Image 1 (cartoon, rainbow, N blue to C red):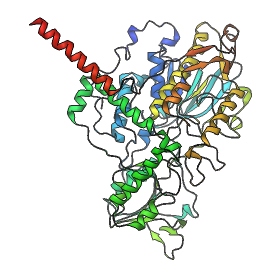
Image 2 (spheres, rainbow, N blue to C red; image 1 turned 60 degrees about the horizontal axis):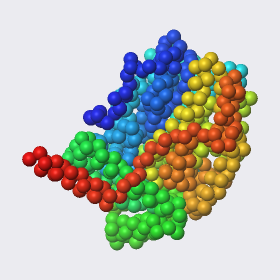
Image 3 (cartoon, rainbow, N blue to C red; image 1 turned 45 degrees about the vertical axis):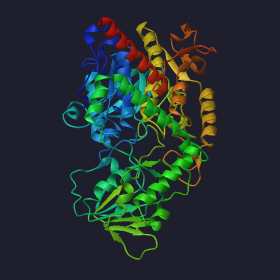
Image 4 (cartoon, rainbow, N blue to C red; image 1 turned 90 degrees about the vertical axis):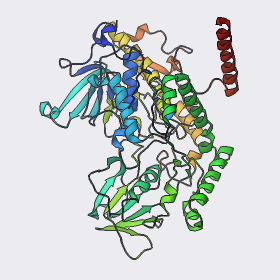
Length: 586
């Protein structure tokens, strides 16, 4: 939990002190249940960030957050499997405006991250804007009213007794559902014939007793690397079903000492410096996962080889099975200190033969005569990452569905806006994933960009006018085409592996090609020449369609701006001034 709230702004959420007048400053209440200025779909990191931006930077309170689960947290609420933790340094895994000085570990665990997110939501007063157990089924753009009409299904407890569904209209719709929310199954013959327990890692059943069970985990990605060491301690037998090995590098996880937590709390510049250096380190590793011939890629290969031989001594049979034949970065890199040692346990087996079919009591592996019997099969198979926003049915301008817009492939202008979807913004949409750094850096940049569009639309609404904004299709397609060309030159496109960001046709729909800073700079201004507008206020916006007309967005600078040498010189000079002042007073 965020035990010290001094890092939060003093204006965190003071309704009485806000000088904003009119309907935008009024929260949605019982009387206007079915209308809002802005509807945010999703209460995870992206939804929380968007809501805070509206409150703090735009002084807008007339918004709702629709969340299908029972609380804030998003993927960190859904994924609660044993060993679940973050692959990004804790000092970097928080909002820039609400940094947590009290992380307990170098890499934070799921429960600690969830505590952080719910604490931030509480401190900014987001619960009064949230509607939990509210699943969005459909969103339809009204060409006459120039508004979105969103259909919401209500589930869970008493809420559904009042109404099972309703529709809410809004001037702007923000999709903050992300990429990692729909568990992906497996395509194996006779899958449904299995009569034992099956659970997906993102839907972990903690009521199930693992002790003494025969367990199979399907998949060898980051999730399995976190689950296996924990499950192996309880299971009588653990079989890890590997199709493709992962590049594994050491985590070097450790507790953060209390003195350092105190230092970060009471001397914020030290925390910001540590965060900046973590940012620099992560950014420097971009070439390791994008350029197969880079020095950092070679370093990753060397780190993996060393780790294999140190943690699996005298096991060349495992070295061969666990060494990838594709470039680093083609698949998600696994960061772990204890995955390889788990494979040395007597009750753990690495199965690489491939699955032939499921049976009533287990799995028949290829090339084997007998069936391996299991009490529990864990699907660590990831998520359906290619069908963004599914299963929500979205219909845009002139009745054009999102399926029609994305008939070729999912794409969005700068990853946030979509042609024929007016007054619509996405967070963590197509081609915005980072494989080397914290996604919060991306999400904050996207929030600021979308906020500019929302502000234009609501300014018109304040004047009693209407305004709809859409990215030009030709600009969007040109952006997407250039990005795909850049991505095809990276390790992400290596044909020797499959990944959750590359489709079967070779299109890379999820990843961004550059660094985090590159993406932040990409969203550092709204170029109005790339948008078109309609509505009664459109004629008064002379910025639209004009080359060079932009709205600048201040980028959050997270990387270091001063070298350690410069800081040392400054510190020595500052200390000298203090000493001189003391001597002078004496």
